[in-house]
View (cartoon, rainbow, N blue to C red):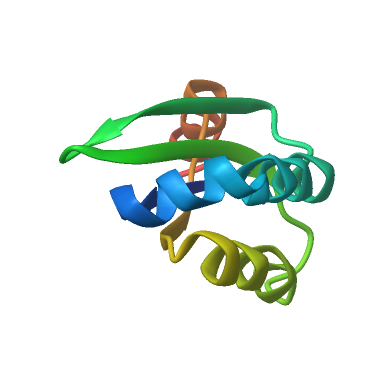
Length: 95
């Protein structure tokens, strides 16, 4: 199932994570674990934010993915299933 993860982190914690190297370690963990098809970095409400689109095999993977992010970055995380335009077209044609 294709998933989208969005995370935002407090500015102060983000500054600390960048200075200590925790950001690089956490980003490496995210990339190695998710193997995302897309990764974007941006600002949301004045906070650092990132979005990753990836394939998930099992719901249990979320704990393995999320816990290091919570601990290292004090991030807020949102995850949800997403469809490509082709996926949506197939779903609508099957009705």
